[in-house]
Length: 306
Image (cartoon, rainbow, N blue to C red; front, side, top):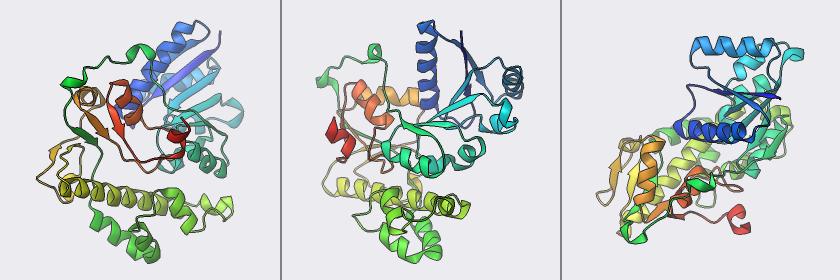
Protein backbone atom coordinates (compact mmCIF):
# COMPACT_ATOMS: atom_id res chain seq x y z
CA UNK A 1 0.00 0.00 0.00
CA UNK A 2 1.50 3.39 -0.98
CA UNK A 3 2.47 5.82 1.77
CA UNK A 4 1.55 9.51 1.70
CA UNK A 5 3.50 11.79 4.02
CA UNK A 6 1.39 14.87 4.85
CA UNK A 7 3.44 17.79 6.14
CA UNK A 8 2.17 20.69 8.21
CA UNK A 9 4.13 23.65 9.51
CA UNK A 10 4.27 26.87 11.44
CA UNK A 11 3.56 29.09 8.44
CA UNK A 12 0.23 27.39 7.93
CA UNK A 13 -2.86 29.25 9.08
CA UNK A 14 -5.58 27.36 10.90
CA UNK A 15 -7.98 26.96 8.01
CA UNK A 16 -5.23 25.08 6.14
CA UNK A 17 -4.82 22.72 9.10
CA UNK A 18 -8.56 22.16 8.98
CA UNK A 19 -8.36 21.24 5.28
CA UNK A 20 -5.41 18.92 5.82
CA UNK A 21 -7.09 17.13 8.73
CA UNK A 22 -10.21 16.53 6.62
CA UNK A 23 -8.18 15.28 3.66
CA UNK A 24 -6.12 12.99 5.86
CA UNK A 25 -9.27 11.49 7.38
CA UNK A 26 -10.80 10.83 3.96
CA UNK A 27 -7.62 9.19 2.65
CA UNK A 28 -7.23 7.04 5.77
CA UNK A 29 -10.85 5.91 5.59
CA UNK A 30 -10.41 4.90 1.95
CA UNK A 31 -8.12 2.06 3.01
CA UNK A 32 -6.07 2.44 -0.18
CA UNK A 33 -3.14 4.43 1.22
CA UNK A 34 -1.09 4.62 4.38
CA UNK A 35 -1.20 8.20 5.72
CA UNK A 36 1.57 9.65 7.90
CA UNK A 37 1.16 13.19 9.27
CA UNK A 38 4.02 15.27 10.65
CA UNK A 39 4.16 18.86 11.88
CA UNK A 40 7.64 19.90 10.76
CA UNK A 41 7.59 23.12 12.78
CA UNK A 42 8.99 20.79 15.47
CA UNK A 43 12.66 20.03 14.69
CA UNK A 44 12.38 16.40 15.74
CA UNK A 45 9.48 15.89 13.30
CA UNK A 46 11.40 17.53 10.47
CA UNK A 47 14.27 15.11 11.09
CA UNK A 48 11.82 12.20 11.18
CA UNK A 49 10.26 13.31 7.88
CA UNK A 50 13.65 13.60 6.22
CA UNK A 51 14.69 10.19 7.54
CA UNK A 52 11.50 8.57 6.26
CA UNK A 53 11.97 10.10 2.81
CA UNK A 54 15.66 9.12 2.65
CA UNK A 55 14.81 5.52 3.54
CA UNK A 56 12.40 5.55 0.58
CA UNK A 57 9.46 4.78 2.83
CA UNK A 58 7.40 7.54 1.21
CA UNK A 59 5.69 7.48 -2.18
CA UNK A 60 4.12 10.96 -2.09
CA UNK A 61 4.77 14.04 0.03
CA UNK A 62 1.78 16.37 0.28
CA UNK A 63 1.40 19.80 1.87
CA UNK A 64 -0.55 23.03 1.67
CA UNK A 65 1.15 26.21 0.41
CA UNK A 66 4.44 24.40 -0.31
CA UNK A 67 5.15 23.61 3.35
CA UNK A 68 8.18 21.31 3.43
CA UNK A 69 9.77 22.65 0.25
CA UNK A 70 13.00 23.24 2.17
CA UNK A 71 13.19 19.56 3.13
CA UNK A 72 12.55 18.34 -0.40
CA UNK A 73 14.96 20.77 -2.03
CA UNK A 74 17.76 19.63 0.31
CA UNK A 75 17.63 16.12 -1.18
CA UNK A 76 19.47 15.04 -4.34
CA UNK A 77 17.13 15.14 -7.33
CA UNK A 78 17.22 11.36 -7.75
CA UNK A 79 16.22 10.84 -4.09
CA UNK A 80 13.20 13.12 -4.10
CA UNK A 81 9.75 11.54 -3.82
CA UNK A 82 6.79 12.89 -5.71
CA UNK A 83 5.90 16.23 -4.06
CA UNK A 84 2.38 17.63 -4.41
CA UNK A 85 1.26 20.90 -2.87
CA UNK A 86 -2.14 22.58 -2.74
CA UNK A 87 -2.00 26.37 -2.94
CA UNK A 88 -4.79 28.19 -1.11
CA UNK A 89 -3.33 31.60 -2.09
CA UNK A 90 -2.02 33.12 -5.29
CA UNK A 91 1.29 31.38 -6.15
CA UNK A 92 3.13 34.71 -6.03
CA UNK A 93 2.97 34.43 -2.22
CA UNK A 94 4.89 31.14 -2.23
CA UNK A 95 7.33 31.85 -5.05
CA UNK A 96 10.56 30.98 -3.19
CA UNK A 97 9.27 27.66 -1.90
CA UNK A 98 7.80 26.69 -5.25
CA UNK A 99 10.99 27.42 -7.14
CA UNK A 100 13.13 25.61 -4.55
CA UNK A 101 11.30 22.29 -4.76
CA UNK A 102 9.32 22.52 -8.05
CA UNK A 103 6.37 20.45 -6.79
CA UNK A 104 3.27 19.43 -8.67
CA UNK A 105 0.87 22.24 -7.84
CA UNK A 106 -2.87 22.08 -7.20
CA UNK A 107 -4.54 25.51 -7.47
CA UNK A 108 -7.89 26.62 -6.05
CA UNK A 109 -8.26 29.12 -8.92
CA UNK A 110 -7.87 28.48 -12.64
CA UNK A 111 -6.04 31.77 -13.17
CA UNK A 112 -3.36 30.58 -10.73
CA UNK A 113 -2.71 27.53 -12.92
CA UNK A 114 -1.44 29.61 -15.81
CA UNK A 115 0.81 31.64 -13.51
CA UNK A 116 2.39 28.46 -12.12
CA UNK A 117 2.92 27.10 -15.61
CA UNK A 118 4.79 30.27 -16.53
CA UNK A 119 7.07 29.57 -13.58
CA UNK A 120 7.83 26.23 -15.21
CA UNK A 121 5.71 24.22 -12.77
CA UNK A 122 3.21 21.46 -13.43
CA UNK A 123 -0.14 22.80 -12.21
CA UNK A 124 -3.79 21.70 -12.16
CA UNK A 125 -7.08 23.16 -11.01
CA UNK A 126 -8.22 21.71 -7.66
CA UNK A 127 -11.16 23.73 -6.27
CA UNK A 128 -12.27 24.11 -2.68
CA UNK A 129 -14.73 21.62 -1.23
CA UNK A 130 -16.15 20.57 2.14
CA UNK A 131 -17.27 17.31 3.63
CA UNK A 132 -20.95 16.76 2.95
CA UNK A 133 -21.71 15.72 6.53
CA UNK A 134 -20.32 19.04 7.78
CA UNK A 135 -23.11 21.07 6.17
CA UNK A 136 -24.91 22.88 8.98
CA UNK A 137 -28.75 23.07 9.14
CA UNK A 138 -29.74 26.69 9.58
CA UNK A 139 -32.62 28.65 11.11
CA UNK A 140 -32.68 31.86 9.05
CA UNK A 141 -34.77 33.70 11.63
CA UNK A 142 -31.86 33.53 14.09
CA UNK A 143 -29.28 34.98 11.68
CA UNK A 144 -28.30 38.63 12.01
CA UNK A 145 -25.84 41.10 10.54
CA UNK A 146 -23.24 41.14 7.78
CA UNK A 147 -19.83 39.59 8.46
CA UNK A 148 -16.76 40.90 6.65
CA UNK A 149 -13.62 38.91 7.47
CA UNK A 150 -10.53 40.51 5.96
CA UNK A 151 -7.25 42.10 7.00
CA UNK A 152 -6.68 45.84 6.75
CA UNK A 153 -3.47 47.74 6.00
CA UNK A 154 -2.10 51.27 5.73
CA UNK A 155 -3.16 52.29 2.22
CA UNK A 156 -1.13 55.52 2.23
CA UNK A 157 2.10 53.77 3.22
CA UNK A 158 1.67 51.09 0.54
CA UNK A 159 0.78 53.67 -2.12
CA UNK A 160 3.82 55.79 -1.27
CA UNK A 161 6.05 52.74 -1.45
CA UNK A 162 4.74 51.76 -4.88
CA UNK A 163 4.77 55.35 -6.19
CA UNK A 164 8.50 55.52 -5.53
CA UNK A 165 9.05 52.38 -7.62
CA UNK A 166 6.50 52.56 -10.44
CA UNK A 167 4.38 55.75 -10.39
CA UNK A 168 2.26 54.78 -13.40
CA UNK A 169 1.22 51.49 -11.80
CA UNK A 170 0.37 53.23 -8.53
CA UNK A 171 -2.07 55.41 -10.45
CA UNK A 172 -3.47 52.38 -12.24
CA UNK A 173 -4.31 50.64 -8.96
CA UNK A 174 -6.58 53.48 -7.92
CA UNK A 175 -8.63 52.90 -11.10
CA UNK A 176 -11.89 51.13 -10.31
CA UNK A 177 -11.48 48.90 -13.39
CA UNK A 178 -8.33 47.32 -11.98
CA UNK A 179 -9.50 44.32 -9.99
CA UNK A 180 -6.63 41.86 -9.51
CA UNK A 181 -3.10 40.79 -10.38
CA UNK A 182 -4.12 39.71 -13.88
CA UNK A 183 -5.01 43.33 -14.68
CA UNK A 184 -1.73 44.51 -13.14
CA UNK A 185 0.31 42.00 -15.13
CA UNK A 186 -1.39 43.07 -18.34
CA UNK A 187 -0.70 46.74 -17.56
CA UNK A 188 2.96 45.90 -16.93
CA UNK A 189 2.91 43.74 -20.08
CA UNK A 190 4.15 40.83 -18.02
CA UNK A 191 1.72 38.63 -19.92
CA UNK A 192 4.01 39.14 -22.95
CA UNK A 193 7.49 38.88 -21.43
CA UNK A 194 9.64 35.76 -21.39
CA UNK A 195 9.00 33.42 -18.48
CA UNK A 196 12.50 33.94 -17.08
CA UNK A 197 11.70 37.66 -16.69
CA UNK A 198 8.57 36.85 -14.70
CA UNK A 199 10.64 34.59 -12.46
CA UNK A 200 12.94 37.38 -11.27
CA UNK A 201 12.66 38.16 -7.56
CA UNK A 202 12.32 41.89 -8.25
CA UNK A 203 9.26 41.26 -10.43
CA UNK A 204 7.68 38.95 -7.86
CA UNK A 205 8.28 41.53 -5.09
CA UNK A 206 6.59 44.20 -7.20
CA UNK A 207 3.58 41.95 -7.81
CA UNK A 208 3.29 41.23 -4.08
CA UNK A 209 3.26 44.95 -3.30
CA UNK A 210 0.68 45.59 -6.04
CA UNK A 211 -1.56 42.83 -4.76
CA UNK A 212 -1.43 44.05 -1.16
CA UNK A 213 -2.18 47.62 -2.20
CA UNK A 214 -4.97 46.59 -4.55
CA UNK A 215 -6.70 44.54 -1.85
CA UNK A 216 -6.36 47.41 0.63
CA UNK A 217 -7.77 50.02 -1.77
CA UNK A 218 -10.76 47.88 -2.73
CA UNK A 219 -11.56 46.85 0.85
CA UNK A 220 -11.33 50.42 2.11
CA UNK A 221 -13.69 51.57 -0.63
CA UNK A 222 -16.07 48.76 0.17
CA UNK A 223 -16.41 49.51 3.87
CA UNK A 224 -16.62 53.26 3.13
CA UNK A 225 -19.49 52.75 0.68
CA UNK A 226 -21.30 50.50 3.15
CA UNK A 227 -20.96 53.14 5.89
CA UNK A 228 -22.21 55.88 3.55
CA UNK A 229 -25.29 53.80 2.75
CA UNK A 230 -25.94 52.97 6.42
CA UNK A 231 -25.04 49.31 5.96
CA UNK A 232 -23.43 48.09 9.18
CA UNK A 233 -20.68 45.46 8.99
CA UNK A 234 -19.00 43.29 11.57
CA UNK A 235 -15.38 43.53 10.41
CA UNK A 236 -13.04 40.80 11.64
CA UNK A 237 -9.30 41.06 11.09
CA UNK A 238 -6.09 42.79 12.06
CA UNK A 239 -4.76 45.98 10.53
CA UNK A 240 -7.85 48.15 10.45
CA UNK A 241 -6.46 50.46 13.10
CA UNK A 242 -3.94 51.64 10.48
CA UNK A 243 -6.73 53.02 8.30
CA UNK A 244 -9.95 54.89 8.80
CA UNK A 245 -12.62 53.31 10.99
CA UNK A 246 -16.30 54.11 10.57
CA UNK A 247 -18.63 54.36 13.55
CA UNK A 248 -21.28 52.49 11.58
CA UNK A 249 -19.21 49.31 11.68
CA UNK A 250 -18.16 46.99 14.49
CA UNK A 251 -14.50 45.98 14.54
CA UNK A 252 -13.13 42.73 15.98
CA UNK A 253 -9.52 41.48 16.00
CA UNK A 254 -8.48 38.53 13.88
CA UNK A 255 -10.06 35.27 15.02
CA UNK A 256 -8.94 31.69 14.57
CA UNK A 257 -10.81 29.69 11.96
CA UNK A 258 -12.63 27.68 14.65
CA UNK A 259 -13.75 30.97 16.25
CA UNK A 260 -14.81 32.40 12.89
CA UNK A 261 -17.06 29.47 11.95
CA UNK A 262 -19.76 30.24 14.60
CA UNK A 263 -19.77 33.88 13.48
CA UNK A 264 -20.34 32.70 9.91
CA UNK A 265 -23.25 30.56 11.07
CA UNK A 266 -24.81 33.38 13.10
CA UNK A 267 -24.59 36.01 10.33
CA UNK A 268 -27.36 36.76 7.84
CA UNK A 269 -24.80 37.49 5.12
CA UNK A 270 -21.07 37.19 4.57
CA UNK A 271 -19.53 40.00 2.55
CA UNK A 272 -16.56 38.57 0.70
CA UNK A 273 -13.76 40.40 -1.07
CA UNK A 274 -10.59 38.75 -2.30
CA UNK A 275 -9.45 39.95 -5.74
CA UNK A 276 -6.93 37.15 -6.22
CA UNK A 277 -9.68 34.66 -7.06
CA UNK A 278 -11.50 35.34 -10.33
CA UNK A 279 -11.74 31.78 -11.69
CA UNK A 280 -12.29 29.72 -8.56
CA UNK A 281 -13.58 29.72 -5.01
CA UNK A 282 -12.27 30.95 -1.67
CA UNK A 283 -12.70 29.24 1.70
CA UNK A 284 -14.93 32.03 2.99
CA UNK A 285 -17.37 31.37 0.15
CA UNK A 286 -17.35 27.59 0.59
CA UNK A 287 -17.51 27.55 4.38
CA UNK A 288 -20.01 30.42 4.48
CA UNK A 289 -22.41 28.47 2.29
CA UNK A 290 -21.71 25.36 4.33
CA UNK A 291 -22.83 27.26 7.43
CA UNK A 292 -26.11 28.08 5.68
CA UNK A 293 -25.18 31.75 5.23
CA UNK A 294 -25.58 33.63 1.97
CA UNK A 295 -22.36 35.11 0.58
CA UNK A 296 -22.22 38.48 -1.17
CA UNK A 297 -19.29 38.73 -3.56
CA UNK A 298 -18.40 40.23 -6.96
CA UNK A 299 -19.43 38.32 -10.05
CA UNK A 300 -16.73 36.19 -11.58
CA UNK A 301 -16.44 33.57 -14.29
CA UNK A 302 -16.31 30.47 -12.10
CA UNK A 303 -19.41 31.38 -10.08
CA UNK A 304 -21.37 32.32 -13.21
CA UNK A 305 -20.54 28.95 -14.74
CA UNK A 306 -21.87 27.19 -11.62
